[in-house]
Length: 199
Image (cartoon, rainbow, N blue to C red; front, side, top):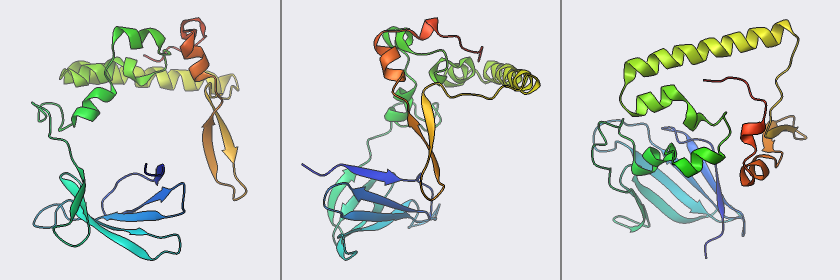
């Protein structure tokens, strides 16, 4: 079994991504090459390195096709799934991206009112109703401005419900769970929480 890995940062062209192996200390560096047309478009180059930083394996491919290890043509270690039917109509989303916001009746029952899958503007946009999505988005933004104004007038500071802020020894801030979300979700108590009207 492969050791669990973590990836730091978001995928952006010409940005370096480092994937760390939690066991063994090895890591992989991959760089998305910023070339949007021509032979090198969507190219990914990288290397798997030992704990000491020595190159163990070279990686190459295209982020929309697949990733290979070793000298060309190399062994395929990852291949992109085919695009779903009508992907052009759905903003070019992959099947995975399309399913991220899927909202079944069972799931709707256990979600807090703050879950963005419940945003009406997002739902309208996914259904292709752009005018309704724009109207809803303006209404949501006005609700946010009104809520912020009321909080400022009453000297109220927002308190995160499901996360807490941590500051490490270098002063870097991060947010971590306070372990309340999943407890509430097991016994759907979200409907009983006092929440602001978001949408």
